[in-house]
Amino acid sequence: MRLPQSDQKRIIIVGGGFGGLNLAKSLRKSDFQVILIDQQNHHNFQPLLYQIATAGLMPDAIVAPFRNIFSRQKNVFFRMARVEHIDAEQQRIETNIGYASYDYLVLATGATTNFFGMDRVQRHAYTLKTIEDALELRSAFIQYLEAAVSRTDVDENECMHFVLIGGGPTGLEMAGALAELKKNEIKTGYPDLDNDRIKIHLIEMGDELLAPMSDKASKKALQYVRDMGVKVWLSTAIEDYIDGHVVLSNGEKLKTPMLFYAAGVTGDAPEGLAQAKMAKGRRIEVDLHTRVLNYENIFAIGDIAAMPNPETGQPHPQLAQPAIQQGKYLAKYLNTGCPAEHPPFQYKDYGTMATVGKNKAVADLPWGRFTGTFAWLMWLFVHVMSLVAFRNRINVIVNWSMSYFNTHKKYKIITRSPRDRTQSQEPKIKEPA
Image 1 (cartoon, rainbow, N blue to C red):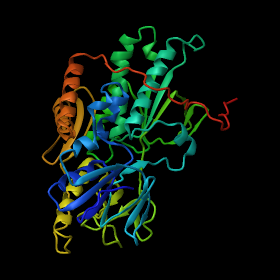
Image 2 (cartoon, one colour; image 1 turned 90 degrees about the horizontal axis):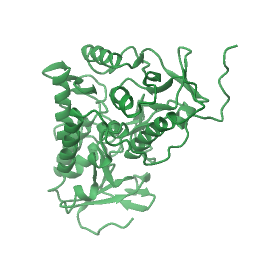
Image 3 (tube, one colour; image 1 turned 120 degrees about the vertical axis):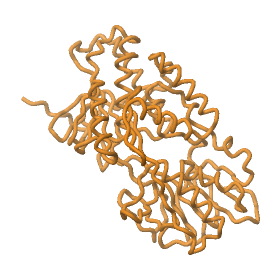
Image 4 (cartoon, rainbow, N blue to C red; image 1 turned 45 degrees about the vertical axis):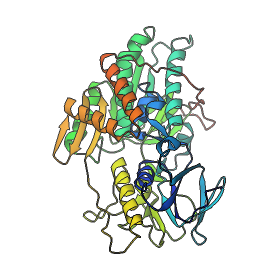
């Protein structure tokens, strides 16, 4: 890998998510050469990917190219690459475009979807981690609706089931967005399609939605989605996906053209850290300075890092705020020369929010728990202010303002031909005699 020659110590940051991005930005005035490596050439704001998938926003509203973000930060250099192996003894990384040496290495690689060994589900389900995922999901959904109004071989009494796995914020927000699409967009935009045939299912293996949040938030979120027409299956898990059918733990089988999966994540760490200790979910154990255990100059932040909360002993949640705060903390720690007496990281919990639809949201904040319109407005404000670029903020504000008074989705565009995920070469489901 070709990198600028410099007498400065080199920090390589692997991953341009919330943690890696804030670390690189916080090293603006440092005396380090900073190399940011990511498989994509842009930062995407993952909390709003579901709005791309449901035709509410276009991709340019929530992405920002790394080279634009760091155009005025002369000590940061971006390389688009995939890190394949870490050689800790030689202090270098191996990527698909060559090697790069480092003085300090920071892993901010985040997490990927955990299918818990369900191979068929993994092959056929849609996920939502990248812009490409969101665009494919949007194209698949709109393409299916277009095909449904044209086909002559469809049983008029057959329901169209859309199944979402996972009752966390992503699954809940997707369910709410699809329910609003069904109520507003499909009813008016596809008048020759029987709207009542469309069924939205939200499957959660636990006994409540939004399990990490308060009981008030969980119960209110459940009420919201049920009132919007979503069928919620609690204490129910997905077991398999065979011949276009979702097989559930309660014995039910749902035929679906679109299976969306957001039920778990697992750490996405490069190979080579043989001495590192791995916590649950393949997260790398780090100390309170974000240093990977058993390594002096390798650090991990964000979703990939399992840093114990001193009060509970449990790792910090895999959310944006811990990653952002760890990135900013690590910049200060590196700038001071990493002394052992440096104050440890302290996570400040600003609360958790989730939205279900227009004027419907829940918020657990340090100073109170809120639902309804007030929580929804707070959710809007926090997400707008968290966007990286000013242009992104203006774009989203304009789009949301127009959408509030006009229920039509502007971006019902098929941009690609999704692969057929409804068929399988595996044995078919045996229908009851």
